[in-house]
Length: 352
Image 1 (cartoon, rainbow, N blue to C red):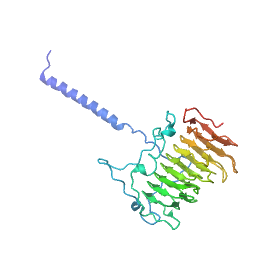
Image 2 (cartoon, rainbow, N blue to C red):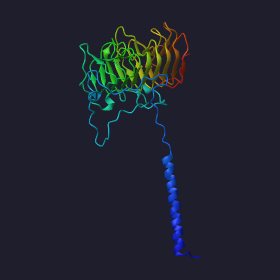
Image 3 (tube, rainbow, N blue to C red):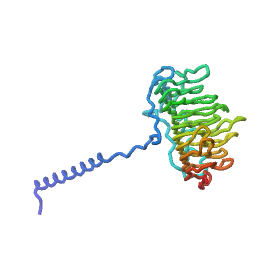
Image 4 (cartoon, one colour):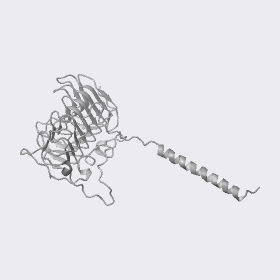
């Protein structure tokens, strides 16, 4: 039986309507699908220093005027971007100490100011006669600066980024007692091969991200509320009286060292990471997913005057077997040490 023309037209209209309804339903489903959650970059829940806010420089210059112009962008580039953070996770390869970036660890190619493409300037960097750059304004943002002296942070919520600090004295960057919210990121700290350096960065309530620290007598020292992540401490200075530690604490609360490269091959090397209690007790110290190389010991945890450090967790670290005595030195107590392994053959390492 042959359909009449009007019947065919009605059937075609019905078929078109059904197809349009199907397309609409698919579109609705796509619009309703939730976006994947963004990766969290929050500080550990144990502490919070508050987010820094833009403000003025120590010289009274608005923070916007303290920013340096970026290097010329390549043709077709829409905006300048910070360097990609080293990918977290554990590489399955061996001997990552020889190929840090390829293994996903920080090195000079993904830390400091140079990978950002910024052009440094000394404009607005006013030093005291003792070559000290004092930051006294809350919320100051120091961006793209070549600081040829030591930095003293004396105000809350100060940010130093995309900059270089060259200091051959005790404290290249010092956060004064009671000051909170200091953030140093994408910055190079050069101790200029001075054995006088007591702490490349000290002491409390600060965050380091993608910081390149070298040629200092000591790496960062930490008291309370410190996070160091995706940073590179290496080439510590040699001197007759040096007793170098890449990371040192003599009393701490709520410290996180996550996904860094810490190397201590100095002649006067002590430990790569040292956690002790000479100046106070120590609680909540996390050492996670770092590459640790050199030292008499990779990790040293000791009771020295104020009890044994409590809740020390050393987890999933790649340890290069260039230690002088052993991977761990744990005296008078116990720590949680799990998932740690040798860099050369991936064999597990124990703190027992």
